Image (cartoon, rainbow, N blue to C red; front, side, top):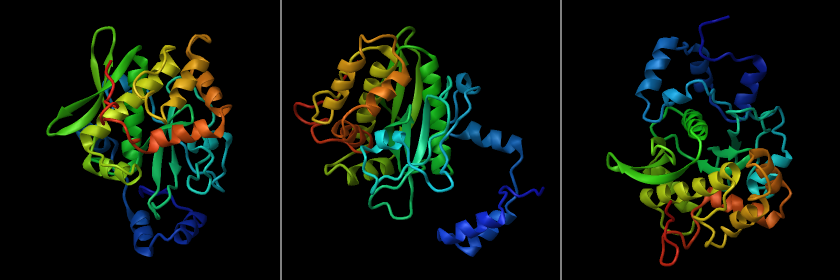
Length: 295
């Protein structure tokens, strides 16, 4: 064993070289020293999106690329079947409590060598992270977001809303019972720019925060509360949420597995609409006749 922060085998080094990682970066990885646990804790404490104390026991769990980047049925549910644009990772096995949320690496069209992360609810994409924000890495940001979503899930019924703070925008979860709030994620200018490129419309931080709040609220209603989606159903792509609501609401106790099965067994067109909702801000949202929803 060494004190290196990275444990690289010969085959790992060969793979990194084949993927275009430079010799300089590989040498830096081999010589990097792992940070002491207390220093890592200090970094997390200073992180604007670090885990809430209530979520400390909810360990982040994310999907890793399989040896051959294998695709799955879950990947088709994720991206509407567009294998040429969205190559998903092999999903992690099992979905125990606290593991309903995950993320996977995707290759988006036009992204070049920079891979993005789709945050998923039971293997179905609900939003895409394309920039690390205030974090040291994109996966660090995704891990923090998973902890927050799991913490919100543990609080019971609630909804999401966009808020302004420190001159920026954020997505907040508010519990229905006591009104307690939990910040879920900050929305940065780079996030808005990345979504704008795939939306064929102007997207600001404020608009994106409002959109993600409405999208998360609709998914929360369908998958966890047994209630119909209401925020985005007036959008053409929102018909997919309305269809899921009709198929699931009143069919029994709200369950994330039932939600996934409903998506998996749906026509490709519906999955395609769900992917568009996750990866772009549709025209009509926030415009005349398509204003953001409210709780």
